Amino acid sequence: MQRNNDKLVMIADDDPDIVDVLQCIVEEEGYRVITTSNEATTEDVRKHMPDLLLLDRWMLNTNGLTICQILKGDSATRHIPILMLTASGDIHQLAKNAGADEFMEKPFDMNTLLQKIEELVWLFFFIEVIL
Image (cartoon, rainbow, N blue to C red; front, side):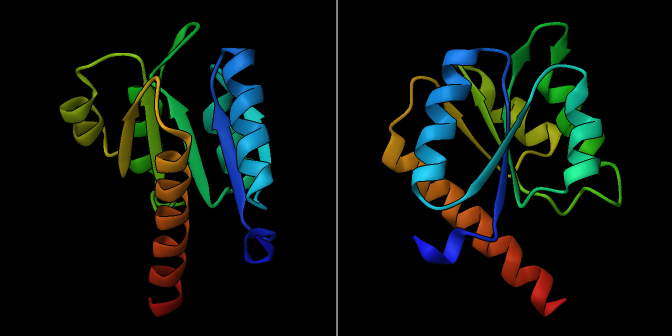
């Protein structure tokens, strides 16, 4: 998809296999992709200002819910959509309370994931344009 070439998706997960699969699939849709993990996530988001953050709930030494709360509490990053990913079944309320814009349980359907990515990226793009 040509129209996604200027959109940057950041993947934050400590599982290299998950990162590789997600990166491949998201790049195939035409998005630019960068990856991060663990404690570096908040700094990397502030540095790169992605159009979307795919955030794992559980990373080594890091809780994605905490990262989400930090980013959504910061006026410089609160506009960045966050899609939380987790193998935990209790994510719905936890992600909502942390400020995540969307969530998905692992394993997830790749077509559904790509649809959610596109919806969030373009919704937030249009909101920024209007505001």
